[in-house]
Image (tube, rainbow, N blue to C red; front, side, top):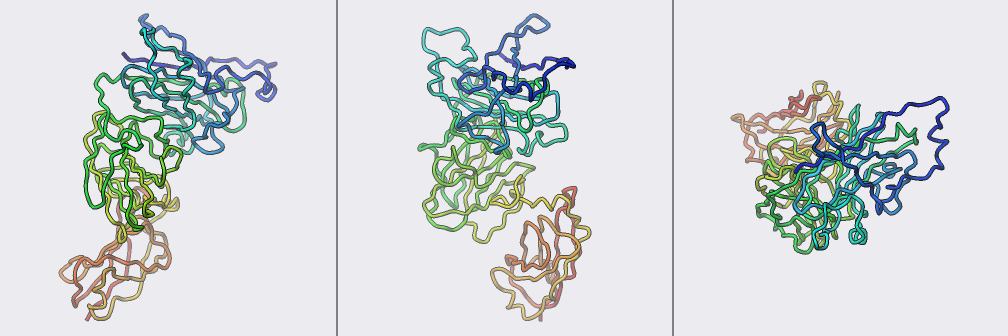
Length: 466
């Protein structure tokens, strides 16, 4: 059965004598101001008389912040909040919560998957939205599992923002939804939020190995590819929110490095929509080292710094319940460069293990770039090293997501490499592909235009080896 939940705004008429938001600041907070007292939802009868929806009103004008609850989107987010409860179901559910308001001010949303809760026998009627005593005793509001709002890099940052979260939860797991606002407190009408919930029962469901990050999470070994089943992946209470890289479900693998050498972590397969890596103890309260979203075909990649014996947690996210198996691989990364999440990825944050492009690349004009440098000269043997050094000077504009190739006799590529960006004076080291011989050589450089197309930059770096 499909259940729709809508928290509807009530159209208010502002009277001349109405009190302002500041004048009502001392009024009592709403009853669902705390996570231990989430609101219930009243049935809503559809036009055909079938009660397929429920409704409620989210009033934030007098709401307060929550002590001890992490602010998922930064210290300014969730300045005043109210709570709602999505009851547990005997089958898995795929849940989407969408929020909007009368104004364009940002709305913060977070979902907290609760521990497994099975109503005691005899079978009761459908569980109420408010917390049963047994569920209240194991309330989980310490780890937000998914969140959306200003700063998540999604629709919340658009000109006309809207916040929405989607997650898949296992059977018998309730979900608490935190709704908040930030900034200056407004009038009751302006603070009111419209929420819509769509809960889709999943009749066919089987747990996937590695669905939970814990002692039984499967391990992955270096230099070896392993299959990672993604179908039926869910979000559970220990799964921390990563706002820039959300997914409906996730699967975990763990690795304990034997050396301090960096590792290249890659995942292939269209079903894998995100990749995140955590370091240290259980990842529930730790931010990821970085994360990557899928932007096209190809591998998602990260170049991860490691410390011998310090555990890595690899999280592969998936959006489809029937996603095909992905392939995960961990390789040595000493001579590797990862740019913007790899061939199929997009790193939403600058720098880091995912090699995210800096903000300046958003306005870079590669057609204005000119690359000069010292002539290539000398005996061929001087270039027969593992990494060929080339000194360049970039003027006019930076070159982002740069691919460099050194062409030589017979039009072959003798060395090639990649860089997040080229700007100013640089010494680049290009991994050698074949043995250098006598002849003429030239450097070719391509980068991304403002439209995301790969464009060749003007360069005068060339020479002859004798």
